[in-house]
Length: 344
Length: 271
Image 1: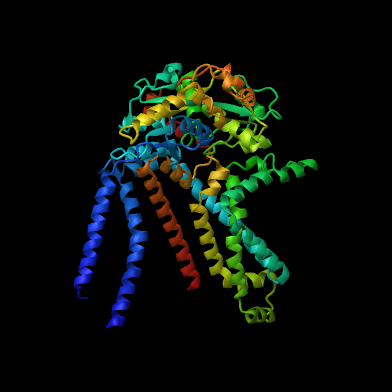
Image 2: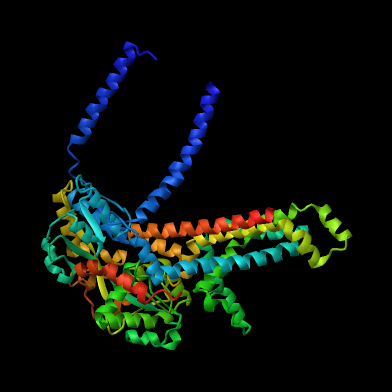
């Protein structure tokens, strides 16, 4: 085909327009007023919506949020985008957020509100702060379990044989936090020996929590966390379960809030972080069944949720060292697989 | 000339498509399995075959698939023979058989738990008349997986077997009968040899489907029974890509060996 003059002019015009548009697009001033949040999706939307409404009303700053997936996906996305960040804030649980910190995707920011938050709910280096906490614990069906176990070893009662489940620690954060809690309280070798002894009493290691099974009585005792369990009770009507905490205690973890390095709107993001950690902002966390990390928030929690969570306030915490957790996670999982699982 | 070009173009496309979408991904998978931290090594395979977990998963996969296929093929054969002469019953059986095909295996397993679990409706109804219906006792073990496989994959065996039976020449049966062959003798000497290729093919298809499925293992095995597919899923979830590809390669080789063996058997039968 022979190109005539008109055609050459047209193609040249299209190319020039494309170059000019591309140059404008990549060098334009990004919208300064918008704050973008990347968040994991476990009930957080329920607390984010009223937070955003109040914050935007007070400051005029618009907020947008997306769910790239679980906490791991949130952190992977900010790591991938760290040369040209799109997000200003991440909401991701421990230990996933450590990967974002260690890969240089986060900016150090210690909010003035952080002084009201206990040290075990914030990063010692100041890269992230707890937003809300949740605790790994057992729950039982009170119809079948009339005298709940008081210690880990009480789980070895004959009546519980084949009626306990805890999630596969190689696939579930709750499962891993439980076995690490056992190892921390009993010692590593004794802990693995106990888990192997517990195995005949365990019917299943699903990939995630199974509230429906305990509610129906298919299973009598299962491992869960207060956030998932409360959500099941309040939104799905799976009321036939109660928190069970043994003398050894419960392992805490939390969803952190962090400032993305070189994000488009750092000043707005800092304001939002301050607000989310303030007394008013923390009062929204129970709406998504999260436990406020700020001290002295008991009065802000709805009565029906306080009733469910009551045993947590009296329990002992088994604090986890998150750097050690990340370093040893594979070793703990592999050893569990080899020494505790499978039954064949 | 134009036709020739079109023909060769089409042939090239047909040749390139499997290269791109089948052999190349498999090549990448196998290649990743023989690299450890960027260096060529068989250490993943050494780890696989020296680990009791991985070898147990391999033997569990074979055990579960073989036992399931044996029971499915015997049950399938009995069902098809029992109803093949009764057209209305056959239609009902075919209809019921097609039902599991429209469900996802995972949803199907949840239904099994609600029916046969400790708090399941069937278990409850039997308990009401004083019978401890035993399925709940082994539902979450490898025998539970076999049970779910039988219920879910039986139709995949029955429906092609019906077709094999329908293809038998009725004159052959009549000729056998006129020569005095009846009952089990007729079945063994005349009918079964006719449907044997379909029977063997059905066994192979069921074996391959069961060997490579993950949903039932996840829902019923629930992390207590390790199979190759469960470990493959778990290693990918843990971002252990090299080990996951090693498991996938072992699984693929196992599948090829089984398919090749069945093909040889089929070849021998056809001779």
